[in-house]
Image 1 (cartoon, one colour):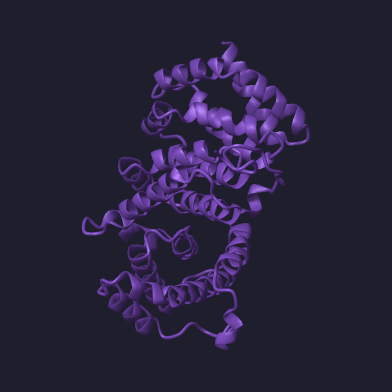
Image 2 (tube, one colour):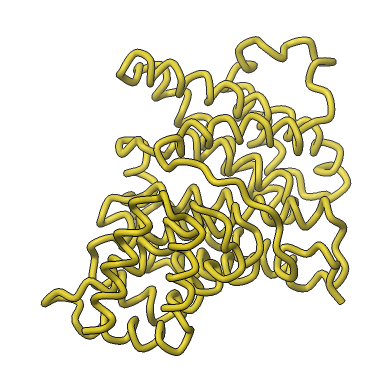
Length: 345
């Protein structure tokens, strides 16, 4: 039995946002949600607005904790782990804002980024069953990694690094735990949904064609699709899951084929149906369909498959409903008109 407010069982209200504000909203949301899911009161530590404690010392804390085998001992350090990740979130936001303001990345920041990534990955490794830790670590990783090719590259290009594969596995395990919980509390399900939303943000940030190919090879696109299927009434998961899928598949016929083969078109249709009043879900979902259904020499077969699936899913009715819901959104209207025109041909 599922709760009557469940994100995969009941629609929740959605407020539309402009895609131009995406990065800004990510940073703001990260700060707010870190406070929501982080330690109840970081002010009691007396350094809420100061620099984080020495990164080497914090990394040493996680490395020592990793060697502790007893569950009880690790449990005693859970609060400290959350405290450190909370500090990392705030510091990474400040660093990102300074980078955006100055238009460049400082060498000192690069070292700090690497150390924070190491610490966040260790935290997830140690507490891979704790959604609160996973969420906060993903928040740190997303803020640091997204938009920084130099920082992203070692994560997917280095043969000795399994960071991407590990995160994908952690996301899928977290989702499986949520599926097995027949009667979750509202807080637990909200947190589980936030883990998936943040995972989509993290994976979708790797829009380099080689990086996206690696993520798809490791099952990342499948993990994103599973997330939006399960949390089909959670506008945030659907919005950023569709955004991530679009980034990984845009203008890449092989990736588009992979998306169609795992049931991606059906997932998009479900998201459009269940979040009909959310402009961002509509925009990102329709953009994926628009890209896949644009018939080219490279994707003709995939385009045909997508159109056939769309016909079975009553896509035309969903698209017309989206035009009615967002009559002033030029992007949505133009993409829908193109899709419907293409489908008729």
